[in-house]
Amino acid sequence: MTRSVFCKKLQQQLPGLSVAPYPGEKGKFIYENISAQAWQAWQKQQVMLINEKHLSMASADDRRYLTEQMDRFLANETFDSASGYVPPQSDS
Image (cartoon, rainbow, N blue to C red; front, side):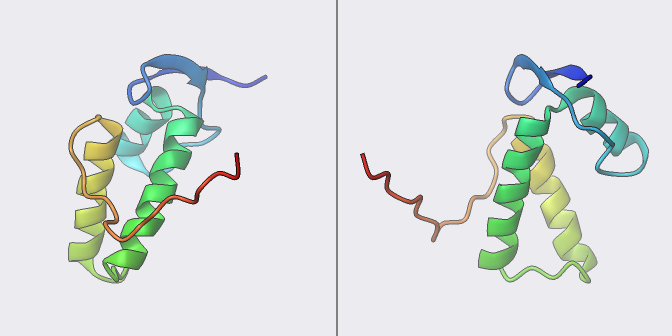
């Protein structure tokens, strides 16, 4: 049975994550308050930021930047987006 959370990002009751994506308090908060759908949206955004800004996960500054952007994204605050990204056109 899928667990459900009231997602603070999407403001509705949705299926939650199966495990905490981070250790510690931040992971616990995400697990209890962010839906799997919102987390998946963040992961897509994160990949775009890493690629466009040429971030290195070996760099503490880059990891700190991504964590700050994740916090903003999940809290529905203004966050950096990939400026060169153009969503695909639908064929309808």
